[in-house]
Amino acid sequence: MEHRTLGRTGRDVSVVGLGTWQLGADWGEVSEADARAVLEASVAAGVDLVDTADVYGDGRSEQVIGAFLRDHPDRERITVATKMGRRVEQVPENYRLEAFREWTDRSRRNLGVDTLDLVQLHCPPSATIDDDATYDALDTLVADGAVAAYGVSVETAEQALAAIARPHVASVQIILNAFRLKPLDRVLPAAAEAGVGIIARVPLASGLLSGRYDERTTFAADDHRTFNRDGSAFDQGETFSGVDYGAGVEAAREFSRLVAEHGPEGATAAQVALAWVWQQPGVSTVIPGARNTEQAAANAAAGELPPLAPALLDGVRELYDRSFRAAVHHRW
Image 1 (cartoon, rainbow, N blue to C red):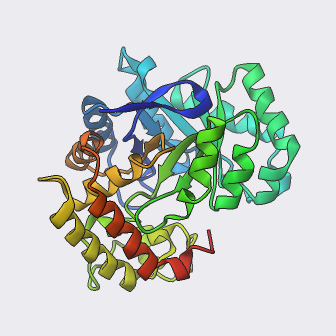
Image 2 (tube, one colour; image 1 turned 45 degrees about the vertical axis):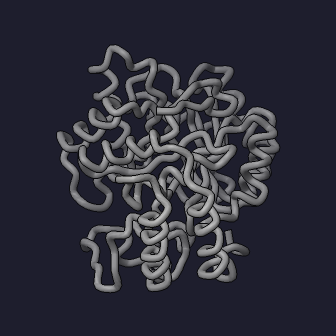
């Protein structure tokens, strides 16, 4: 699998990583054995970037990853990016050095490490991203040896640009997929110019781009997508990338047709969707989740796909412009 430097961390990481929200079992039961199997399958397939957060399962995801690392003699080649800041109300006054120390100490214990490879503020308020004191506090964590590097996970392009402008921000995590193209306009070019890594999340638009959903699809009662087709109980820009579910299903059918006509032979719609993300200039890695070993292996294989055909790339742009630009481009 191709590797790229993750911004100012200086670490080379696989272009397909692993997102581990699901391993915290916040939505849908995942046993510790199954979570461990997903990690094993991902690393065996060449994945060496694992993204987690202190809030995933209230620390369970970090703990599972920590146990996995302890059993791997080559743990140094695996980069773990965690996040902090969503275990409390997301208001600017909660983002201060004392809290950062408390949160990172907890993550260090969960992961069983002295120094966190990368800690990201977890979608903080814009005022926090704009505050000089935020970065003074984060720089202190680096000076103390608690973290090796820091980044920001954001909800909007403007937040991303504000973080990229800071001299010590190593990476920015943002939603990017075939149904959310706005980061291509300014965020990716700015990050590339500044040497800031881009971690792309929600690459399958909450599963829409896998092509497996239709208008009759239902989700388990504890799945966050059950309650959020209208954005009522979760960030509307996150679930299904903020697109209308019905329009998303129809667009996903068109995407699958593009893949069948112009995609690499044998590649699934999900794999092409992942390849579309990591092949964008400026992207360091993409972090799909996986609930089983088969998904983990298939996701990793997307990191080995050849450059996508111009006809497919043009088709994605036309589909977005026709189906989603007017509804979502100005929002995030």
